[in-house]
Image (tube, rainbow, N blue to C red):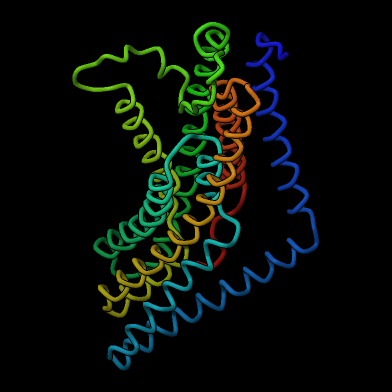
Length: 327
């Protein structure tokens, strides 16, 4: 016979243990020689792709035919897929969100895709806006703006992480407070996104609590996508600067859109993989008779803390490191 009074605390402890285990696995992997070789190889391949993008832009300017255009598009798409495999704050934030928050596969894929295209749009806004203001030194100016946007993006990620910590902490407090009376039943396998969703009256005539929570979840996903996308992809800036400089504006835009599509595919796959871990995990916790609402709230709080750590550490690094050396 299980001690029902201890189930919420056990569920919270399980969340801490599981999150700690995942972090330790990640640290162990990043400390391995294989990871070091992998990162070196990824950076070398990214440099090769960047050179290929520059060569494709020059080739398109010289030949101006469909083959050169689609070559540029294809390289941009491949660069987007491969670039997203390497280290990056976007994947870390989005996969953490998918792992620690209840969301649908459709919403997860939309979040990953939106963040990728926001990055492309940010690069286009920077380069396009500067091209209208400056006659020369476009690359230098674009990288200078990127130096500003980078810490802004990291600060926004940290702020969103704090917001998730607040929501997760509030939900955890309410879940523990109610688990022993209203929620601690034999059918305690419901997986609420927030424990406070149950505190609303279920007999609304116009907007249901589920609709309110769904809208809130879409809103949180949009905040994540915008915060991640505020820092543009360096490859997108390079191809746009080259394209604008030689008068191939629409070709450069098309290449960046293809790049964003490739990035969206990779990040979506990683985020859906993280979500695939969450689903059986929640079922396992529920089958053990523990408070899944408390577990979900604890996991969300820990995920928020992880996002705060990622954002704050990157923000600190961006403020103490020198500006782009290749101006």
